[in-house]
Amino acid sequence: MAETPLNEKLVEGTWTERQVDERIADIILDPSRHTEAQIKVPKFLDKLLPAQAKSPWTMMVGIGFLLVNVLLVAITYLVLTGIGIWGNNQPTGWGFDIINFVWWIGIGHAGTLISAILLLLRQRWRNSINRFAEAMTIFAVMCAGMYPLLHTGRPWVAYWLMPYPNIMGLWPQFRSPLIWDVFAVSTYFTVSLLFWYVGMVPDFATLRDRAKPGFARIAFGLLSMGWRGSAKHWHRYEHASIILAGISTPLVLSVHSIVSFDFAMSIVPGWNATIFPPYFVAGAVFAGFAMVILLAIPVRKWYRLEELITMKHFDWMAKVMLATGLVVAYGYCMELFYMWYSGSPFETSLLRNRVGLASGPYSWSFWCLILFNIVAPFPLWFPKVRKNLTALFVISIAISIGMWFERFVIIPMSLTRDYLPSAFGYYTPTFWDFAMFFGTIGFFVFMMFLFVRFLPSINMFEIKELLHQEKHDSDHQPATAEAH
Picture (cartoon, rainbow, N blue to C red):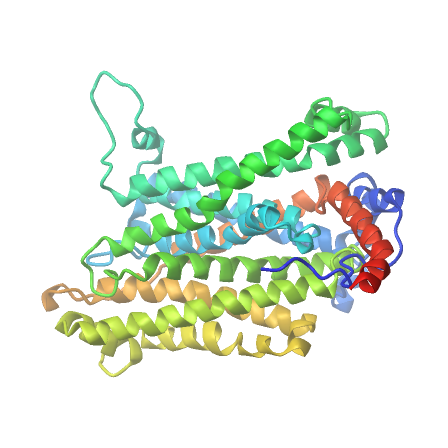
């Protein structure tokens, strides 16, 4: 991946460092910034609701908070009653719980890719979107972590999953996929949280200096850990960032590879395939970038950040989405080819069930998967589509839905048609499956908009560094051209 060409400006307009601080910091320090944009509501509500309630931030936080309450009710009922309230049965022991776990883990991958890998590759176009994507990673992993914890049926003894010293000699079963997920997800969450926080320390110092005396200044002062912007501080900051980026980079590959081993190490038809690790990793980045675009488009418009998050950023993200989408499409083709080429009657039977040649269930979900993940992203080949925000928004929604269907096809479809016809069954999700799923979506939206309100959603010091680099490049470009 080549560096951004010198003639492509990633920040539009003429900016001073003070203006960058004002534009980004005032989102946090000036509450009126969250009520500037207004959403049109029906006439009968227009007079009843105050102007503040019609702001996008208030509405999104309100919707998210309502769904968080749905999540709390679903979890409370689940803990009191047991996982029998879900649609899991025999032989479908994994249902919405693992489907949504894998889906949420995948969504978090774009943040680590943008933060770590693109940092190591010195890609300048990451600077305006990395903070937003990192926050998305943290909250997506939090949503994902709920499912394995509750799937055990006894979340209050989850500490048994850790190899802690104890006199009872109770140690985890390290051959269990549950243990692999615990170590993978906890490592991923810890490193991502450290990377996210360390990256915000210089910006916390800026907010500390700009905030009025009071709670905000004290809070940002504590979070900035005495940052003064000295040469020693910057030296240590850059070392810490590179070290954390170096640790995070293999995590992008390892975490979803480990999640794919949950399936690939089994003997269930349709799961025992060596293509799963790269296919899952590409799918995770594919879904992650779709979610970044899905959230960045409205936030960019509502907070007037068009000059900082430019169309070039969306063009690059769309290209990454297109590339990973092609890898995912190749994975689908190879998965079907393996089923046919194996000659196994169980694999070929599953193949017929998936494409609808047999009377097996869920073939509709397979074709929805093809429609949303292969057909819908095809227009990204065209530059006009990549620079059309409406088209990108619709395609990103389609990809998010399609990646959920991918997990649905992999899990219930394989489990309901196993080796013994006497064990054939049917999986139907219940109301509580959907309540918990939409509840986690509400939690994710709620946390993301709290992040936008109280923490810097764009990296201030990296934007200022980018402006300095672009000015330096533009000053030296004519001389370089004459030399050539």
